Image (cartoon, rainbow, N blue to C red):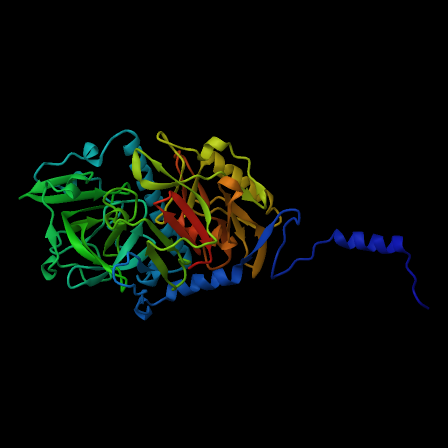
Length: 489
């Protein structure tokens, strides 16, 4: 006999079944009333194993784009730190803890620079130096020797001297002075390349003390009419030596003569691996200012990958860029401020007072920095963003906090998961949507992921490189605009 069910009974079965949630080992869901995106857990965890076994010796030589004579376009390859410097950490958790320690030191350095500028102080006000000699002992002691702390997160390959010798240099939008380790060394850390030897370059030129470049240094001294420089960072790291000019070569795309750089004979702190640093800030001694770049851009690949991307000068901004005003602080010209209007989670704008992100000469504002890893938000803003995210992820299994992260999840039984979307919002209704892997990152190889934002007591917020990964960030210096173009690495 056929079983006949009337419509009310069928409706009752449907409603009853909808009350039950069936667990899945492959994915999890959140409320459908908010916008979501997929986090590929398996892929992220695969990279946590891969990065520990990557052999820098297998890195293929970079090929840069050749340009026609008399053009001003320069292109360099960018590499994540672990792709050129062997890691000695026992597991991924230890690697992450090391990265976060470096990151905290980095943030302290930027905040120190801001505070000194706001109070019209210089490093020499805090650490007096003699007129004839710069003494490293006058500086604060480095946090560590650097032997197991490492340096910046992204390196690029630059030629120095005539004939040109290639060196890996840290990319840094948060400082201006370019420098590299030089022979003879009073105290040099371990680097991947042979140390630069000025006696082997025909274009080496020591700057005199009355030169414009020497006068532009925050801290300098004079010895035998040769300019001496000193750059110290808020984390205790420093470099001391002669201030010189050299020829710098950008792969196959060209070279520039008489670029002012520091020839560091005493270099200590968190620099291991790179030969030195390229300052891409907005100050007069930065590489961008010295080569008269009207724009520059970079795309940062995932730090756990062995891939590379490019740093480009004077290249056109991608047509699909989400643009925002690029602002300057008159008291600290190094930093690149962006006019951030708000942040949304799950498609809804988080209620944050508009003045929170406002820039001013008394502090505040939001800067873009490729050297900081984790985005820092003013505490009130961070709490609001975090709470909004937690509210939409109550169905996900939570985990204990980790280092500076207070919001973590256990995804050990999942291969993918639906999570709330996140976007940064700018003037004119423009928004930059972040991929899920740019705000939920693994902190071990077992499946613990954390919300990759952190609070800061500083009035200045920082958009870090974890959030920038996979996006070409273009600084249009001529028109005071910054552009964000996803998937342009």
